[in-house]
Image (tube, rainbow, N blue to C red; front, top):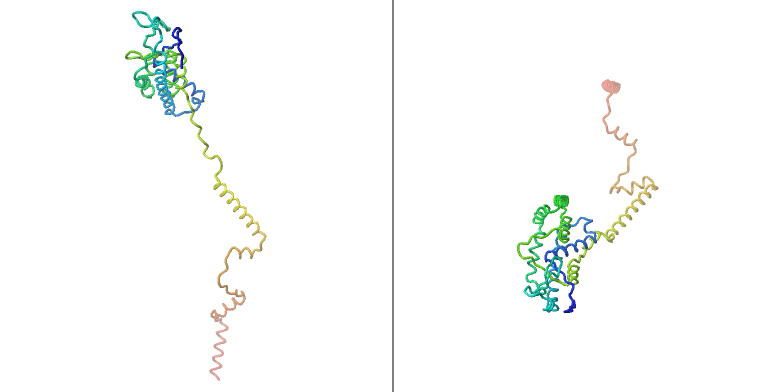
Length: 295
């Protein structure tokens, strides 16, 4: 923890709670950019989730650091450093801001206060309204570029630009009440920003197939073997006699009658067919019948 010498001014930072949040988001976006997140299409839900995670981590770290600072620095500054009547160290910070004597007290209700500032920015519809309103306060070209990003659904890029503008003081959040101010040793504030903005890139998706599954490989080999076997059989068939090929391809009938020679089949057909009666044959029959009658 930070060690304080009661007779030496510690290096303190005065920052609004909103600006501390924007500093954390700006650091997160730098870390995301270093991982190449803005060079490839990314899901908007993942981007918003990372921003929300950073703000939650900032709140947790801020509560822890505030309690630690309160325990170790509650007696600083010594009473002789305080201005009578104001109970503060006058004009300690740039802008002539004073350091109140109770600067070390932990801030109450931090979660709600952080949510009040940043919840509208993390809602897409509300964010668009905020950009439209703030674009009127910016140089025309810059404001127009932000509106074009919104029209092109470049939410992440537009969000990064808005965060940078707030973090650099070019835009100021509108406060409806008293602004919440945080006083922290510079070293501790830097630790909060770095710890809250840690970004772990999601693991790259594994390839669908690292290697060919064995069952697919076995089937492929089996298919190749079958094809080679089939080709071998076709090559063997070409060297076989024609009748052998027929026997291999066709199963012979159960009972095969011997084939009748063509000549005998013709004779059988002629013998079975009725004889044609010619004119000469008819006259011969009449003459025979006449002889039989004379005898």
